[in-house]
Image (cartoon, rainbow, N blue to C red; front, side, top):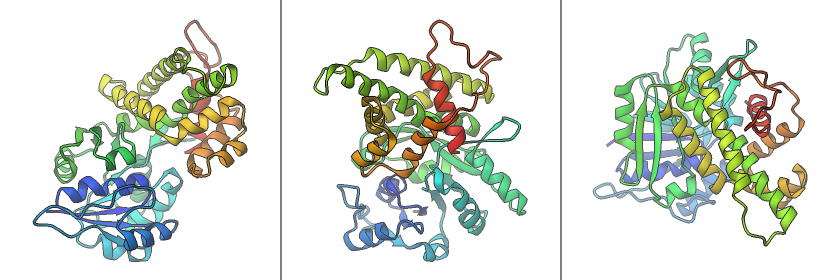
Length: 347
């Protein structure tokens, strides 16, 4: 079987160790410089501190469990690997591009879980694989980077909930090899060579999910914390988010139904299963970002930063289909415009 090295022991990177190891692969989990306590805990207990389940021991005849490495041991963990998975958040994009990717042999494929877009001075939006590839090319390194998109929460993947995602990359043969390493009877993988489309489809989902969750908090504020859930307002913002996802895909030259479905699915799972939902509800009740952070001690810094940017941002959103972005027409909702700004500022 294969050897898979995962760099970044956050929840999603660590969750991917489950299907990888249960396929009989050797799995090496490497913590970043911010993950020392996580790796220490994994070594001591064979369990990620945020997960209820222990890391799998593998399947016969591969009984050994996952291997855990601190960042100083990264070169050792990468040596002989058949696949490297980048498990960093968007805060780690620059670090991953400067400190990790140049040290990975070009013959080893790289698969990234990091989602987002980076806006350029000319208004174009680049997905992270494009950004990394360009920076590597400037160093004389030619590499294609694959990525994961689609609806998947880490804890549900660990629990073996039926999950459907998309792996995207330029080389279909490489994608097929990666799929063979990672696919299980609960982790289902579609393949796409449209990297820009898949990455653009999922990039805004946290911002849109926050807007949808805000309506829950607003209704709790109006009708009481114990009131029945109101779905009309959630559905209205969800529908507007779907429209804006479609327009962004058109802007990126990737407006296909397949890409849109990947993004809408990712939005759905984030609305109902992510920390972004909890923060959005608190903001909808009237708390400011600092109060929401105090209420939810475990919220990731990445999400708190996005919320802060959404509150402060006053930049104009790019026009969709040549229309004035500040003009509200029938059936339009202004919430999504804020979230486009949010991701651009955070990227």
